[in-house]
Image (tube, rainbow, N blue to C red; front, side):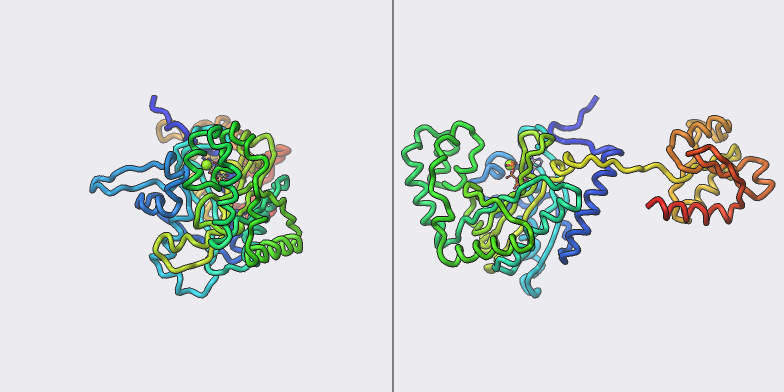
Length: 421
Ligand code: ATP
Ligand code: MG
């Protein structure tokens, strides 16, 4: 039997209802702050990610699904959403719109990683991007948006970790201080870190190799190297976050290791055991210099992406998906007609379908199906009811039965459907 590829997951009925709920709650929080959805291709030119994610990242070096198409173009399944959004922003001249331009996306991403709880090769992210404002107020909006998304899903147990990694003026100073402190440990560090030392020293702090971390305990912090503008931005952000009731944990070790990131970086971190080793449920930051990297005009921007699989691990809600009504009739034309009529009246309804042939199954068998369906009401329309222009309405909760006309039935079901939402 052919299996699904490693690192992919089938989301089955029972789970999909949870995803629909997740998606609809996120959508309503995002639209409340005037973010608008953008839907983009799942593959892009490889060049976009090389430049837009960065050649020194694990994503580009190790994790991309890259292939040549039949015309020998190098394409890559998107490993993340931001690069594509920036590409679309430029392709469609969004820089002419009055800022800020606020967008969100949701969809599958692809990374060649070792699959484990909360880590897949095809996974899903919902993300936001806000372009065109460099002030701390939009940082607050974006961070609060992530927090409110979690709250809308009933997720309360997490911390907002926050740091500032400075700008093009002060970060080079910090990088030098960091290299100075790390140089003596270089021979003891992993080969990735040795490689990062020259190319991307900030990324060393983010090393997943446990043995490196012991050398990173006493390092200078980026906060102590911030220039006056960055310091002011960070202080203002802290003040505003506290004002709106989202006091962050200042985490001086939090980094985004790429040169087009600047100032604000943040993560929502949960210690819920259901997440396994993956505690970060949402990660984001300011990427003020990215647009220039992809040949666009200087455009300050900030965004985040949350991992839908990790969020869904934290949700235990399962929703009731049974139809409200189930039609039973041994005259199959009658059942088909009535079920169609009820559905068109906006009520979730189902009926029995014989596995083979055209003849309806016996009455008793159909009643068993009605029971299995979990419907609240069974609607019986046998010969007697047809003759009387009625149906028998059976309350599946207590077994009681009443006879009503077809017209009254529709009104009754609509009302009952209204009550159950
Ligand atoms: P990690 O350190 O966990 O690999 P990352 O820094 O690569 O995360 P980002 O690129 O910032 O992650 O993506 C944002 C969010 O997307 C993560 O916080 C996580 O919730 C989710 N995510 C990232 N990679 C995966 C994956 N392979 N499977 C499932 N979710 C993921
Ligand atoms: Mg990763």
